[in-house]
Image 1 (cartoon, rainbow, N blue to C red):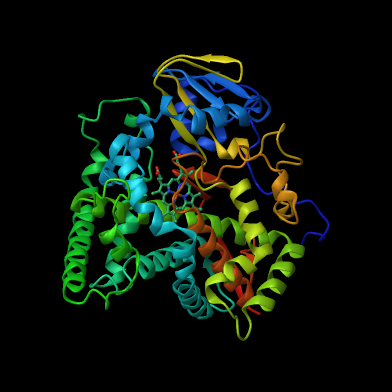
Image 2: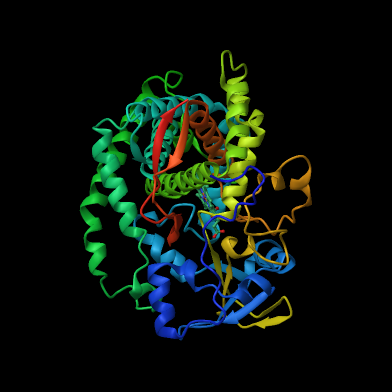
Length: 461
Ligand code: HEM
């Protein structure tokens, strides 16, 4: 067990001294892209390179990142790899839309994820956290995969906040289909990495069909049922994300979302919101299991804030300040989205390098958050970085778990509130130890997760 003053350097691949050759790189990119980064990526402001398909610039200079994602963002479009990997079923949703379609949707959807709306979801998040405590209590003294449990609780939160009156069919069927579906699209297809045109069928994609159909049927039924309810009794319907989505309007043009866009966004919120937030809580649990000092501190905070009358429910996450700092530090060390990428539509200059049209610019939170020039002891776990004014010293463009600029994650507030509530509730009720003999290793399968899950021994406090 660690001494409480020890510096914890949680597991991470050692950066390579030299870049891999094209064949080895392709192999690593399909197995665990995290293992491809070199020392130069963690030390230099920009690293130029690339496969045969084009030039790639990996950018870790805050001022240049500001230029790409904010000041000159109209010159940088979401790249083909990201769009292709995600396009199965999510086209027309906010994550993959571009141009006018994206602008209208972003303006229409912003109120759904505004701070006040999200705070109103606190009660649903607390209920989901309590349901998780009940499920975990059944496993007292046993080893449980907490990564699986976190996927269930984040899906439960989405169910309760998107469709608060349920799926209208067995949620377990939907959950299994959803899990299989997102696992399937979560794989990086070597065809995509190689830039094989999308007209060439991907054998794996065919397997998605039945799962996609189950979703579509379920979501269509839910939408039509809700539309009927709104028509019959507008004041009696729940004020959940589905109702807000059906009412959403672009404030500038008055345009509402089409049926296709509504469906695509429900799928997008589930796809973008459950695995990412699940990983964030999973990594936080792992880090706390390795740091007795922080575990005790977080348990004390949870005891203080979550015992007895908890007062203003909507503001609960804002009172869990240390828990939130652990979440922020977990998102720094293990950012669920490890890389944000864009393609340059025209030439530019970034961090002293000229960028040609067509260059893929990669901003990798995983690299940026561990960059030698930007962080003190970048590989060590220290939530104090986000406490007592220290947070204000962090460059806005050096910490980007949710991206930045116009395409910043719309669900950031939602996700942070949810992760804070769920983590604190777990810590209030349990002490979790990593299963004896289990070694944790980070692996990137679209999102960053512990390879083989997170088996932990569950003990009630
Ligand atoms: C820890 C959890 C999460 C992380 C790390 C995360 C990360 C990100 C990142 C990095 C982006 C920007 C991508 C880019 O610029 O290319 C993004 C966009 C997005 N995220 Fe999240 N996300 C999380 C949770 C959520 C949740 C809970 C939702 C919804 C319920 C959500 C919905 C979206 C959507 C719709 C976009 C696209 C926004 C746009 O392009 O306008 N995310 N997310």
